[in-house]
Amino acid sequence: MSTDPCSFSSGTRAVTRHLNLVLHVDFDRCVIRATVQLTVEALEDRFSALTLDTRDLQIVSVSANGQAARFTMGPKHSFKGTPLDITLPFDLSRGQHVIVEVTYETSPSASALQWLSPEQTAGRKQPYLFSQCQAHHCRSMVPCQDTPSVKHTYYAQVSVAKDLVAVMSAVRDGQEVDPQDNNRIIYRFRQPVPMPSYLIAIVVGALESREIGPRSRVWSEKEFVDKAAFEFSETETMLKTAEDLVGPYVWGQYDILVLPPSFPYGGMENPCLTYATPTLLAGDKSLSNVIAHEISHSWTGNLVTNKTWEHFWLNEGHTVYLERMIGRSLVSEQFRQFKAMGGWKDLQDSVNTFGADNVLTNLVPSLQDVNPDDAFSSVPYEKGFALLYHLEELLGGPEVFMGFVRSYIQRFSYGSVTTDEWKNHLFTYFKDQVEVLNKVDWNAWMFTPGMPPVKPQYDTTLADACIALSQRWIKAKDQDLSSFKESDVKMLSSHQLIEFLSLLLQEDALPVSHVKKMEEVYDLNAIMNSEIRFRWLRLCVRSRWEEAVPMALKMATEQGRMKYTRPLFRELSNYEKYRDEAVRVFLAHRAAMHPVTSGLVAKDLKVDASKTTSL
Image 1 (cartoon, rainbow, N blue to C red):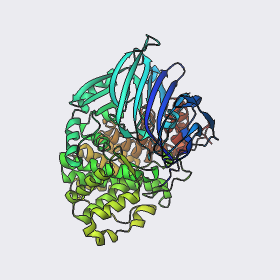
Image 2: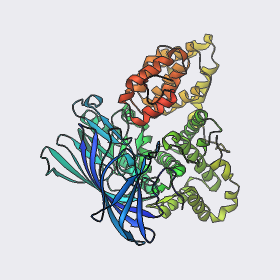
Image 3: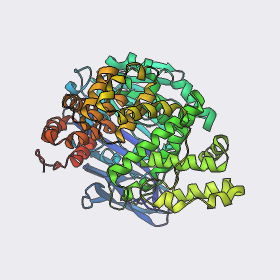
Image 4: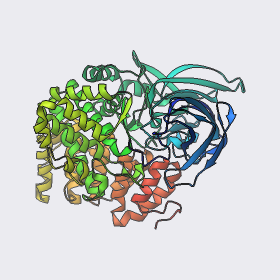
């Protein structure tokens, strides 16, 4: 059984079956005081030494079945944190359970937690806390076996000040006044479906909710809640479409929580409580592919999970494949093809950013001594999708291949998988087409950096208008600029406008005269849709249009979704005249940024992580 290079804890000698969490959220000190009881099952005889992952935790005491247990903290590792070595006061035999109780406190700098002051929220009156544990940050919030190879159920009770509300990645299980302090409320949660530690999530703030479907509510600060209820009103339709494709949704509730702008990702598939970035609320319902993606994770990722982060493509490649199948059902096959082409371009961008010989562009990278945050890119998503789409074409089309995806989910539900196990199942399922599968260059797809060995031939119907318009701009001389009209873009959907800008970003920078003309005829500065805006502003900065610099800096800092913030800062730092300004703005905003985002932007800008000046 493979061991996880990102965890100190071995899932081969013992596994956690259940967690019972008691959390006391302290906004004054920005810490959580907590007790966790881990129900651990021994997988070998004479078991007495348990190692848990921790990071920046202050451990107060440890007991096993109520008896004090000796514990030591190992040396601190740069990103893995510190192993907590526990010696049980007795031996367990294989199959026996022990309840290990750890009392501890988190650090104000815990990498899983972002504490927002009231000024950083929409309401500006109450503070706000949210966690983001993927990939390896749960250990800074809970001492645990922080590896996706281990799955457990959990129960939690969370004490918060009475004007705040707590929600978690679990089913709500009631609330009561805190018996220790009647100015506080205890919220209870239960998660009866086994899941990996990275899916534990907690949010505390001045939250409100609206019902958006028979099993769904949307949560956010009251300033956004009605807008969010409108934007996400298609949720039940998408859930039903996904169920038609891959079988019943097992998690009970499917709620969506709209986070403050500093949330680093587009979405996060926490069970029962999908996180969504507020950048989705730019009044464009057609951009609900983030929700289609997070819904799909309820099967691929949450129900069937990558065994280590080296196999992350199993989570993301299949989820993108399902997300696009939902798009096929709800829109059309041409729409799926169009999205697949856009994904290929995103993959090309990632390969260009990392370099075509960088092993992190392998579908299955080695993460020995690699921080998973540094490896995060669109590669597992889009190289993974491209492989699945290529296999679909070879093996008989979408209906045939969806049969395999359903069978894969059924076979590995509630478990964790490696690429080898996935591939063995593929060969078993398509046993009549083994000669076709043997022709696939598996080594080139999986273990070779750069672009995939085969580029699928996507249907370009919806992309043709985007390609034609982008080519007109690329070939235009200054005297041709008068031929461009507002009507050029009137018939394009927002998806096509995004594609048009993406195509221009793949070419050499346009002359500044061209982007000025583009603004004049298409009025792109007025578009608030984030996917369009961030590409447009990158294009302007790349063409050295100075007027765009303040707008690009504003977008890079007024929200914190890394998909937008990192490329905008990278683009600005390549503009020699404004490089120092970009660094200065980053340093001024750094304290308000999410710790993962600020760490990666500091690397992008080559700013020393500990100092306040650039290198």
